[in-house]
Amino acid sequence: VRIGEFAWSRIEPDPEHFNWDWLQRALDTLGGAGLKVVLGTPTATPPKWLIDRHPDILPVDRDGRPRRFGSRRHYDFSSPTYRQESVRIVTALAERFGSHDAVAGWQTDNEYGCHDTVLSYSPAATRAFRVFLKQRYDTPEALNEAWGNRFWSLEYRLWDEIDLPNLTVTEASPAHWLDFRRFASEQVDLFNRAQMAIIRRFSPGRFVTHNFMGQFLEFDHFKVGQPLDLASWDSYPLGFTDRSSLDEATKRRFAETGHPDIAAFSHDLYRAVGKGRFWVMEQQPGPVNWAAWNPAPAPGMVRLWTWEALAHGAEVVSYFRWRQAPFAQEQMHSGLNRPDGGLDTGGEEAARVAEELAGLDLPEPVQAPVALVFDYEAAWISQIQPQGRDFDYYELVTGWYMTLRRRGLDIDIVPAGAPLDGYRAVVVPSLPLMRDKDLAAFRRFEGPILFGPRTGSKTETFGIPEALPPGPLAEILPIRVTRVESLRPGSERGVAWGNRRFAVPRWAETIDTELEPLARFDAGGPALVGAANRLYLAGWPEAPLREAVAELLIERAGLTAIPLPEGLRLRRRGGLTFAFNYGPETVELPAPKSAVFRLGGPRLEPYEVALWTTP
Image 1 (cartoon, rainbow, N blue to C red):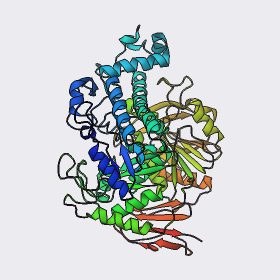
Image 2 (cartoon, rainbow, N blue to C red):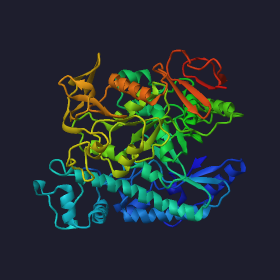
Image 3 (spheres, helix red, strand yellow):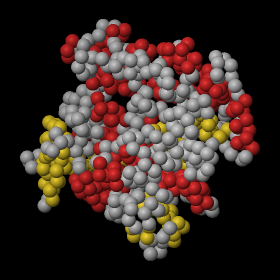
């Protein structure tokens, strides 16, 4: 049971006046019933009296306006006052309940980054950013050189002359923006580590996690996750599908199920963020309240989502919430129980999974055959300088994930620079900034590896590499990118690959190389080129081209593809194979004749789950 993450005004209704009775009673009651508690620190919701005392706690938006009290996450990570208050309330909470027998672990804060709350443009953020820059560059002269500030006479003499990159007449320096994004991410990490240090001191032996949000790119989740004992994330497949970049026809098809790869991607991401360990802290149990449209999940989907999380390695699936609140902002957000206390559909399905799990031993997750490199700085770079309005890094990465999953493959998501030992194939959708450790990992990997557009296109300080892109990658893949272009919707570059034809929309690159291309643009330049097992794709890959390249990787890696219907997905966990039918049609499963089904059978009905072992 997770409690307490929004309860500051109930814990401390007046300054320095604590009311512990209700929380003590809750912990004693839950512990007495044999339940364990994840205790949340309440710092996502500073109370009104604290804001009135210290209005400098409030964040400031990009237009320079304070974001006022009246909802949640109304604080600035850079506020020294709020950091002190956060330490104070977490210390009080951990001292009081850190050794309670019912407390199994802690959740720091709630959903860092939700509601666009990482980037704040406050005076406190400005001061802290200057300190960050001084530590990074030592002198204003070094910063001027790194940022290229001779351009447009942007040179600074003193640290106090440097402002945040918002509210400029036109675009600020991209290097300025990138360092601001790095700074903002570091502020989240420092804020989180301060809370963790207190919990470690007063609640030894308990795990610490944070409930991340998928599709949120404002800070580096790998870095914030590094000191955590495990990662957790909040899974809302219907809302995330509604807010995704998928086309409208696909959104309609999966409106009541969620797209088959949206939750799966985040399961695999947060397994990596948690260094192999993750929970789902909030699983959608029914209609929610925050998307543009909020349909009810199709019958069976809460059960399917739960099993899918377990298949991807989740240790725990927890639901938000236990009972639907009859008041306030989230009163239309379903729970396992209705507002009157009666069991809702999601509660019935969760109970069914609990029964099905009884007696089933889930093996430890094993390494997938394919690694997909995901990098938060790559996302920031493409946001700061998209060069084309529809160049979306997250869409590019998830497009590759979807293509590989449609071929029945399991995928590990890994950060740039991670060891690649044991993988059969690697996909790097785009990695604009390639550091020495990244290149070293790629150099050591002997299997097929694909690099996508814009890889190696930027330096640490957001410049173009002296020898042109792909920068250091040219040491192992001898090509030069001599020109790039972004293409309007409806425009595209034709590609010939043998007797097959493809189209490249959005982005295309001109490649100079002596290597023989595998595929060419109609204008004659290489579209896909390779040296040994290292491949470079010089454009935005729409689905047909992604599929063809994926087939090449699979063949070179010696893997077996299992083409799947649109709504069917597979996942292995140890010796168990799971199948999930997101579609409205019954499907025949690609299970061997020797398969022993532990759940379901060889014909999978809509919105159903099957599980088998192979002797």
